[in-house]
Length: 210
View 1 (cartoon, helix red, strand yellow):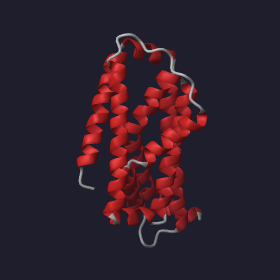
View 2: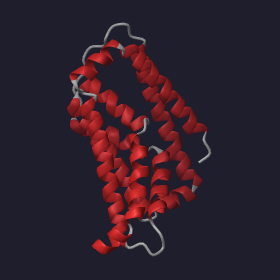
View 3: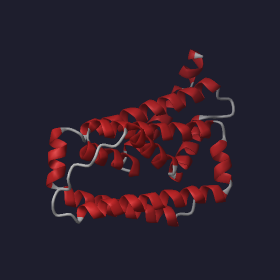
View 4: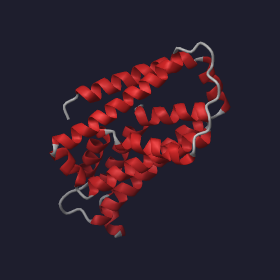
């Protein structure tokens, strides 16, 4: 088992590097983690980040057993997920735009249950068709016909640790006093940028050829 892992270290390093860049780069999931951490605090951001990681784990497992290949092979299923994801991004854009139009800082938002925060992160990532394609590519990148199953387990486990670490880092970083203070100073501009990003992401998602 250890020998198999050592023999496939170059493949694992390539997979982990690609996954790290994909998770760390700005996208709907980590931007929502950042915004939630600044608006509702560290706990809410951390729980939402756990939901995002759980959603990624779900797609990772499905990719490993070949289910995502079936989804990709059936355009109807993929387009349904794409439409749901695009609509949700438009909803996020509307919320950010509404906040940006408020001159005064909105009152503190009511506490949201941990379960609701977790489900929000989970469903947000689960309805992202790009996650399906990304995981399909990640699995294909790290596996060959003769690759032992232990390497597949290492890919999923390692990628989950990367996702967990990055998203929790964002939750902690953006819930610090300095970040919250900075956010309050540029709140309207930040929310306007988020609204523009989510609108653009929704447009690209809904009009893309998957």
